[in-house]
Length: 403
Image (cartoon, rainbow, N blue to C red; front, side):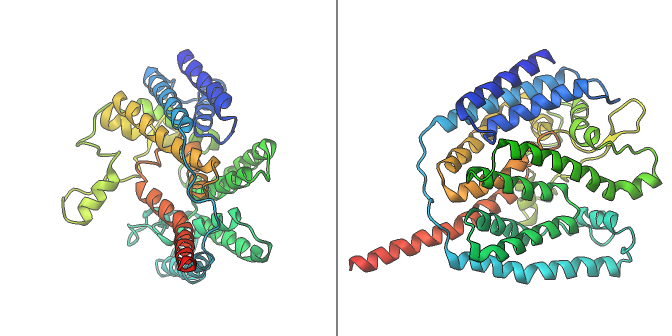
């Protein structure tokens, strides 16, 4: 434990010294894991005691991630998209939202009505979203339009204009409503952190406001978890819904149960995106690994269960400690690159980074970067398109003027 605390603390101080930004990737990762380690050892709970497997893994992860992200930030990078997004594309995104969101609302509630799931609405909405309802195995949360709604909201926030205030408010309400429709904490976090990051980059809010916002979101999620779980809790007294223990701490002892390099085939958990493509295109008959893990007890009384195993799980399960080291290096470079572009006022990268911060902050639950590469590709494309089009029109207009 001591060496893990020392490594995460040094990483935090080094990041703060060089980045001087609370939202720098190395700062987020190091402060997150320093907090989790200290909380596990001082917050009262009855979870299993942590052993060397977790402390060694997290030391490698934080140390290498910090080094690679800070190194990438130190390399000069040119900012390519500092102008405004194409107005026609902004309006197109908004128009698509107006058309698709009401349809998705009707679709979900119509399904629940047909399946007789209008009672216990909060629990059934979540079950339908996860595909835990017979006839809805794909889940209602698989909605490609949702990414566009979120990107559209962040673009409007980043380029706020008073005359478009009503559009910004509408897009915010759409995204919040969608989060409620699928009862997803991660969707709420994406909205929340994206808003904070954009406002922070625009120097509208300060660190104090961010800390107060963190406290508010914790209270909100505590209540949100009650809405999602109260019906299950009544039916099964073996479940324990201490929000902080269940969602922040439980993944660490769960990780201790994983055997290194024990996957059935190469990259079974890490490369599930590529397996899914290969299966759909007929290149293989092997289905991609289900991203929803099995629940397991993480205390001696078997009253606390979890299906999250921290961000280290897929790398360690597939490749052992070498996997943690390699992907810490790779993902650290990736986030360092995007962050450096963002602070250089590359607008699409500000949007992209703001939508990925939640993935860094929720590392105590699971991995959502490599295993969610499809989402990442969608965000990158949708956030860049309005700026690319504006640059294209500018170049073409300049050519016409020269003629």
